Amino acid sequence: QVQLVESGGGLVQAGGSLRLSCAATGSIFSIRAMGWHRQAPGKERELVADITTGGSTNYGDSVKGRFTISRDNAKNTVYLQMNSLTPEDTAVYYCNARDVLDWVHIGATFWGQGTQVTVSS
Image (cartoon, rainbow, N blue to C red; front, top):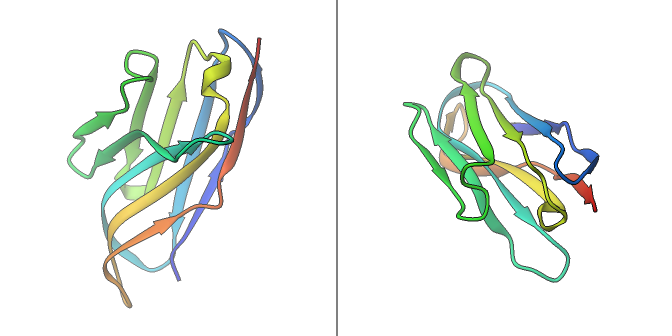
């Protein structure tokens, strides 16, 4: 079974940085896209950033210029470097893997359990 294991969340002061990691485990042949969404209390889940196997990236408007997504295809791992954090970035951050191909699934989507990021003012 495919699992997404997230790490790197925590508490940081405004203006600080954090780096999130997410590793997809299991007997995986390929993952077309990996990325991050976030959900703040009382708000809908929104795209933070995603990246394809080929390195094409897409960012949410609120994080452009501050966050950088990267990926290690050999390790099925995606990273999110978050700089210049503000209290508005406080949310639970969810990793996802899309169009996953393994022994059981074709084109499936998987989500991580979420990691809390809290930015204090």
